[in-house]
Length: 106
Image: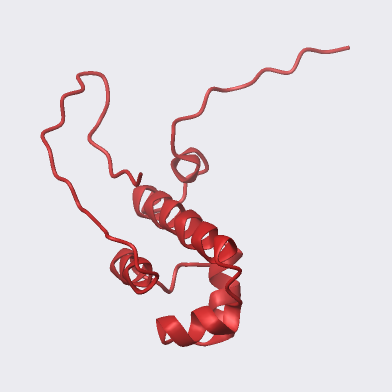
């Protein structure tokens, strides 16, 4: 039986696999998790979300499957507002010495 090595990844899987614009992809994925959770909690159907967001139902389907390249971060933020969510953007000085500044969704 051979030992397989493993690598410790960063906090961004998109960066780990070499996706261009990895930080933007991570933020979009985090925003999509929020949108998906709200839709599930409200038992909102894709066609209802599409009507609310002003997009087509197939676009919602793609978005929920992780194909969100066509949507900007700003547009995803607007979707959250349409779902009656307050969106707050906080900018603060980076204090870490051992890491680069990052974008983060909470």
